[in-house]
Amino acid sequence: EYLAQPWAKEACRKVCWKALDKVVRQRRIVLGAVPTAANPDPDELEPCTGKFTAQYSLPCSHTIFETL
Image (cartoon, rainbow, N blue to C red; front, top):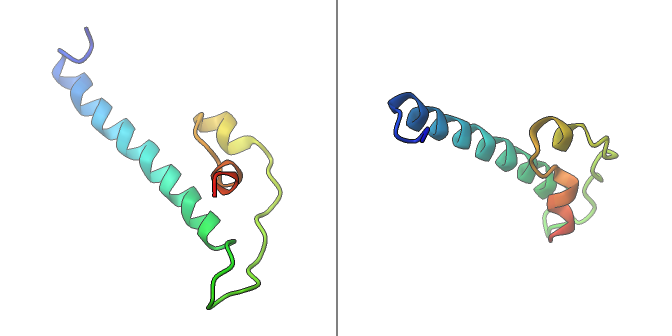
């Protein structure tokens, strides 16, 4: 129903893009906490507050970290 509306198609693309961008940013935070040859002892993730997932209904860096 909504996808037939021109404004909805554009809104879907923008919302999806923004959600993906937020997840990518969380992933970057995770990558900074993963040991590498160049950085064998990286800083740990800050404690999870649950705010990111509560606000956006998207996985936070801690959830992403657990999948590695």
